[in-house]
Image 1 (tube, protein in one colour):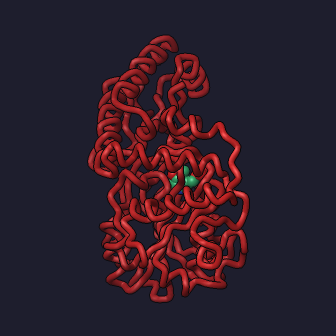
Image 2 (image 1 turned 90 degrees about the vertical axis):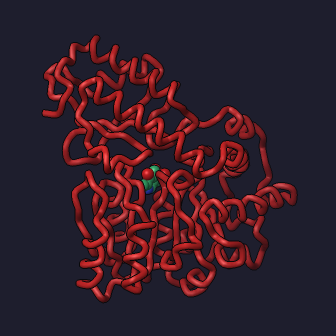
Length: 371
Ligand SMILES: *Cc1c(COP(=O)(O)O)cnc(C)c1O
């Protein structure tokens, strides 16, 4: 089966193969294996050993996003959320439910947030200390680039929190060039092409030390994850980890390095996205995002206006042909999103496009443009 969903993504058989063993996570050998991964993770985030650390948290991506917000934003403090998509809405919800005060900076969900708008919002809200942004918005495919928005946050003397989950490892970002950044979060899956099961945060040591006691949760306290490592070693865990997923992540990082790291991964995904974007237009679909704003992680198109169109039927027919695409959308208009990430290449995208053409034909969907 070919997974063209924006996570969990298609993985290499080499990554999956190492999951078959039982492993004792507190065993000395595994401790060493895990301790060796942590500086590699920090390096992928562009962090510097001795200044930044990587902090793993078992669970899904939203857990580590919540942990980052709880750790760096005190309860009752304000957090400005760049609010231009479905995943930004999720971030706002989890921050609110954690007792943080969300100030929204809304924007259209088919374009990145302009830096001037963020600068204005910060000027109008002098009591906001943190800005949270979703880097690659998984609901639409746009990218809010921290290399553009970060300097605005720095100039206003505020702190940045990046939900980089969907693009991390492919989109360029170097923690060492962003002194305004308190934390960047991502997972073992998505662009790093490991198995799901782990979230990671990379943070400056100074910011973590200043964040002790903020979280209001033991399980989701990144400062406590840091303190535990200081006391018990970098190969230790607080709680039972998804240990097989962690071993697989080590293999995924080997494959990442062998491919050529971030530039190579971005180039492969960019090619996937370009072929997909053009191919969907050729099939008659209307893209949700204009070409100049289209990121390399997912491509989103409007669902066709033709009365013969039936999203559920389309998905089922595609699955019967070996391709799974996302079965929900978070945009206001009905859309369909297709992932460009994972252990896949141009040939897989071309295969999926050919199957889509055949299914549309079968269903008798002639008018494929937006309503
Ligand atoms: C995938 C994703 C998450 C995390 O999703 P989970 O289902 O919780 O793993 C968070 N933010 C963004 C932008 C994502 O793409």
